[in-house]
Image (cartoon, rainbow, N blue to C red):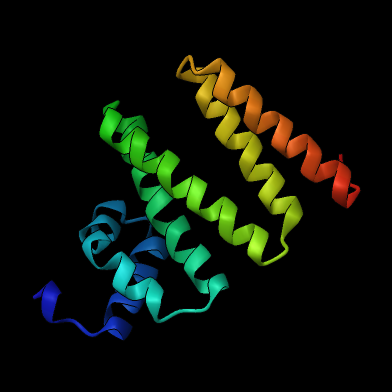
Length: 129
């Protein structure tokens, strides 16, 4: 039963499912995501968020579900914060641009523009834009 699994088992199951591309299995563990993240370092938390982000993105594309689209964006925003904390600024800038691109496709141009400006400022500050 999922609720009885240890945090280590949850981490292992998410990792195995992610590696196998079994996005349905990844999402089965989403209810334990916050519990899992509390026990991990920032780098591992970023990877956990990525697993759930990719799973939601897959279902967004295959089903057109707005619920999965919203979850994908939410997880991307959380990863942006963690990438900054980890000082992975190039990855952070890239993800910010991906967020902006997603917003453009959903017609949210003003918010997308703010993300592009944020990415540009980040790149200028760290010498890669």
